[in-house]
Image (cartoon, rainbow, N blue to C red; front, side, top):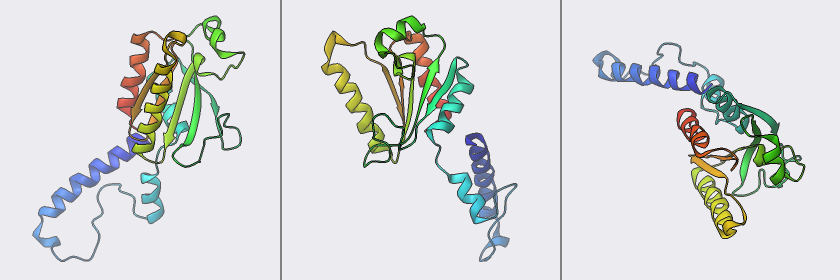
Length: 185
């Protein structure tokens, strides 16, 4: 869907640039229709629909083949009870990265196979400021624990925060940063 949105935007922008230069369109009451741009309000709204954590986790798995979604949380299943609350994430997905040895992850996960130790999370917020505040809060919390905990990797783009397991090597974790840069947030 993200690629389709970009393609529609590029086609629309190119068309507007061309029609904006045409003197025959001056004063026209008709909207310009360019290429395959959506023509109904419902289609246009669908094109602008923000990506959810599930959408982003799917795109993440397309960019990093060792990633698979384990849980797409709802308001009732979110273990932190933060989903949908003021300044908290609107959607959240837990993912697994098969490069992380289960025995290593199990040391940190207290038997919870959906723990970040096995892969990570994708969290989507209502706005950039809330996502930035959450990423900063998680980072500061980890720093305050000093050497008691190996910090997870935290990457943010716009409204999206990806937290990746500390069991990944720095080189492996950079793949999440690169993928987030490609898929946006």
